[in-house]
Amino acid sequence: MGRPAGNDAAAKLAPIAPPPIPAAPDKLPTAKLKVPAGFNIEVYAAGMANARSLALGDKGTVFVGSRLVDKVYAIVNKDGKREVKVLASGLYRPNGVAFKDGTLYIAELSKISKIEKVEDNLDSPPKPTVIFDKLPKDEAHGWKFIAIGPDNKLYAPVGQPGNNVLNDDEHGLIRRMNFDGSGAEVIARGVRHTVGFDWHPETKHLYFTDNGRDWMSEDVPEDELNRITKVGEHFGAPFCLQGNIVDPEFGWGKSCSDYTAPVGLLGPHSAALGMRFYTGTMFPKAYKNAAIIARHGSWNRSRKVGGDVVVAKLNKDGTMKSLEPLLTGFIEDNKYIGRPVDVLQMKDGSLLVSDDYNGAVYRITYGKQKVAGKS
Image (cartoon, rainbow, N blue to C red; front, side):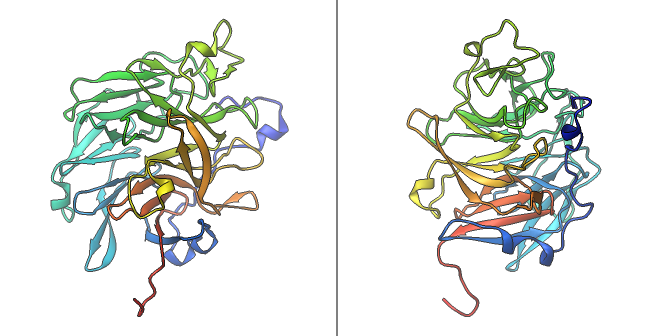
């Protein structure tokens, strides 16, 4: 979308399609992945085509959405082993999953549905029941991330219907609603495309990643880490980019000071997607309340960036203090061997990372690795 004509370098850039089938467990790039000293990385589950967003059930089930296939998966722990089940199929871009009080919520392209008592019926789950069907049907940035806030509301975004466009009031936003789909209201505008957000454990402010526009430059704009402090804030798109660049197409007569600036920048075209604040005790204290972010990796750039999991540590005022690597190695010779999408903290403080390129989920732990036969 929006690629400039007559530019040979630009003509070589296009979104990267994943392999048509998930990688076999022994073909996953785990041995090439790198984590800091003291951390460990292992395969948690494999065989899930286009594994995307993650959610955790009360009984330990990990739910996995998808974007390019029609399925939602469930990773179940059974007799000490993990088993992957297809929980729902026949859905359209079921990227977003969220769980609360026994109910799984699923966000498709244009609707949100639910499966009640889902962990009690993993072997014969009922079909999802639609609770909200008023989302736009645009394919461009149409796939949804969803999450449940501390206010017990369901939050869902709608991206811009193009690379960088003057959208109507139904696009470029984040809205929230009750669990039955009622009471929907817009809480933020000027959002180009967010595929990940979470609430700060202490301030309860909503932080979200936002993907910057393409075809402006290889190095700008950068993706953003944003923070909502009050209902109705506007985050600039498509008028202001990364908080300090007036858009060359739509920024005439506008000022970046009119919009809420990002609290941090996440790299040019890095495709920052899923994020969670780390609240566990397994990782070192320096990770407490830091935002852990999956960067899917650039396509709109000759030299790839992202394709990793990073840790955004914050200042006391809530702005980003530093951005540090946690999981790297997904880019080899400027080509992807995997692409992180979402992160999920488990009850024991370990961290799951989904990889839609290989159809797998990895697990990051900290501490001495257990070896069979040794304590």
